[in-house]
Amino acid sequence: MENKILGLHHITAIAGDAKRNFNFYANVLGLRFIKKTVNFDDPGTYHFYFGDEVGSAGTILTFFPWGEGIQQGRKGSGMATEIGYSVPKGSLDFWQQRFEKYNVIYNKPAEKFGEKYLTFLDPDGLKLELIESKTDDNRKPWETDEVKADVATKGFHNITLTLNSIKATAAILTDIFGYKLIDQEVNRYRYATDTVENAAIVDLVELAEEKRGHVANGSVHHVAFRVQNDEILMHFREKIEAYGLSITPQIDRQYFHSLYFREPGGVLFEIATENPGFTVDESLEELGQNLKLPAQYESDRAAIEAHLVKIN
Image 1 (cartoon, rainbow, N blue to C red):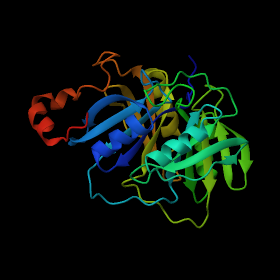
Image 2 (cartoon, rainbow, N blue to C red):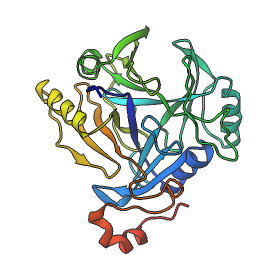
Image 3 (tube, rainbow, N blue to C red):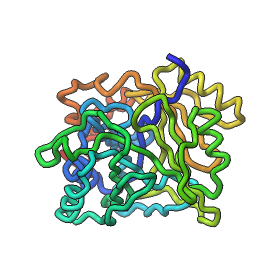
């Protein structure tokens, strides 16, 4: 396998109430709840993972639900501001009706880059989009009793970053990650990789006068890009260091191995491996049913479980 970035791996955001977050993504949006664990740096806080049946790279949305009353994030420059999901053509009517039923804030469908999309907010104010992709998306969606395959989300379509200037961030995408500029509409620049068919797009929106955003409740914490294995991961570590950017050592996140660095525009980027995957500590059938703890916290399980709210 060549040393290439394979599109998006996962996106991590911050939420308030854990139960409300779980109910919205698992029940209203119909994603599979694939892992219930804790924040590695704060074991008193959950870390939730949502995705397709197996937690495929490019479908994984994760949350740190920090609890009620946390500071609200502010959208602005230097952050990821919109998460785009791919949905089947003709499904947006279903989603508008569903959002009406569950009192979800949304805008009427619009179009960009020749694709129809529907913007909505989750209960914490995180901005998402459902996009009828103009390219074929043959990924198998997760189905629920209420959200069937003909309307269900298939995984990420794109992520949008808002920046005062796109130049330095675009250089990371092209010079290090191998993305190419494929389209532009006004101040929105679309970059994509040809290494994968889906979850391959990063949109850069340039707003020179936009104030710096603040990452807190209802905002994206970081964007993770996918590589196949540890060897390729460390190749990118060398490449990013040589570029003159500060990057972490490799970190074991139980279900993948990671590096973190802040790109010049201010967004926290992660590069994550496909290995070992979400079935390393739980069977495919049991994904998301049990509280899984990193080994260093297992001895404190009773205290951690007593502190965390029950969600399912």
